[in-house]
Image 1 (cartoon, rainbow, N blue to C red):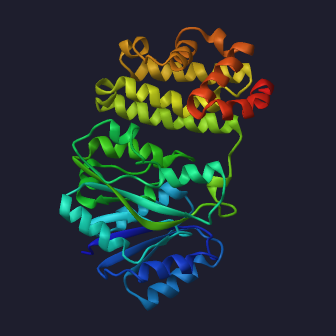
Image 2 (cartoon, rainbow, N blue to C red):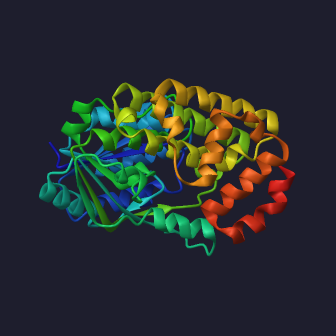
Image 3 (cartoon, one colour):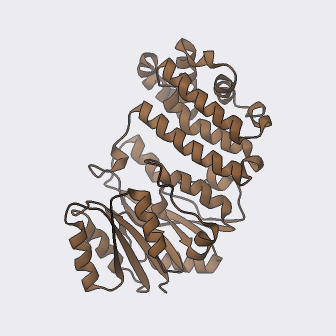
Length: 351
């Protein structure tokens, strides 16, 4: 058994794969295995994997038909043998001491889960990149048992490639990635992972280089608001269903309700009236199905959130025409500040 399994999904990344694998082989801790899942690549990725596996037996190659990122990660989990496992995208690189630090921290704290920092590159001088740097910079913290602050108050998600997991815990919990989600599978996975873990560590150490703007990556696609709302609603559906089934929604109804609002509203309220009302109706049905009834009446003392909640749960007329645009403007101002709201005002009025 290896100390740690590095699960690497591979699909048509011939230009980046060697750099990724070189970073794995450069680890200061030699006791690892790299489970590389070739997800039906049509370029030379598979041959590159075979060449590296021939050079070093710690490189394991699994080939399968194309099934997407979640399918590839699940295949890697099933083939992994390490005490711990982590994920690495095939266009990213590990810092040389990453595996050693992960094992040291998880050994020290007997953690089920460890989430660490990462370095996005190449640097871009814009607001989105600065936000990404914040998201990938968790503080040093430890949670003994689940606290909703882990999900709702920390830079702890998404991006599962900066999280390591104790294999025995993962298998005992029966957690896998949802292969039916075409987008946002990391977010759904975290909402299942953290509430089930008994001990979770956060580390400010930055152990991975994240290529933030590769041409053709999923992060650069699917920016259409209608598509995005639909995809995000699928994630909310999976999260709420799991939380309802396992009692988490009953324990933390206001927290999960507020998260679903934050997750959807910025794009939902930009849709034309009919589409906005249609998606809002689906969201309302999820709330009614999965949350305790009192949650919709005790939402928040934040007036903007209360108006948005009331619009979806009780008064859909607020999701049409000028009322919707006014609510969107207030929501942007509440989330991002007045300056950004003013900058977006022309687009808000055109929505």
